[in-house]
Image (tube, rainbow, N blue to C red):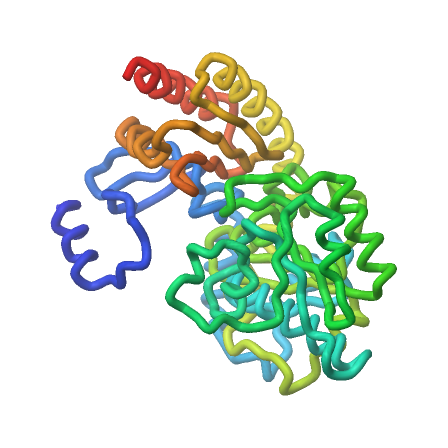
Length: 398
């Protein structure tokens, strides 16, 4: 049955993903099951989405209760779930206002538009360029693709949107040298997740904040993958002792329900006025209910602290594997987002993990990315490490 359904999927679905050869039918916590009933340890969590694990009881209950009352009315109306979700985001972040959308790309698109709009209102036309980082990833719309610092994603989609200047990641001098009278913002990820799990240096980020303040340009943080508890803090910027002007969120914000958000300081957010930007579905009652439930569960159940503890356990064990196997070039990350860089074929290793019942992914053909649900425990981590040791030992003998 699974093979037949995969064949139909290839027939009817656009070929935009190299899909794994399984049909996932249900999930619970850190585990998912395929159509044949086989269980897999999920260390991908829907690409850093299901931070509370699959089908979390509070999110399910909130979604079910809201679905019985109201699906959608549009943003022409005030909606109680949306207001509650925005209030929670403001209470627990630097921000003062929130714009809801449906995805990370939309949140980043909104940030880019808002940075230009804010600068236009304050300084007039001509100040529209945004400095972005090489090896970054901000989305697949034409604008966010243009902001992405990886040429491989842009090929065939030219001409790109103008107004982006690319500089090396973790190089403050390069940012300073790229600033001109046209610059309105600096945009970066604190961990370049899609780019290979590269972590921003603390002093670099603090220097960027000082520099952007001195030049009166905005600092935009793309926390689509690092936000909502992933790094052992609710938001990754908390590790750096700074506050941005704008922050994009998505992925884990609804624990699997599609939702994105742009959080920002009031002065900047107020540059958006009726007619300048909008989203029909953004923050609809169903999405907003999942946001509130997700944030409340993260904050009330000790999940973020647990993430930090599990991250330390995982990091120590991964470093031990690095000492044992010379083809492990590097291990890097924070909280429960980790990259294992290999000098051997990472895609082949990822396939071996799938055969062993472990779901993870490989980026750039050599970096295994681990972004498990934050509720993962020592037992599940040890299962993964035992399998990893076995796979790596087999690879070393080749």
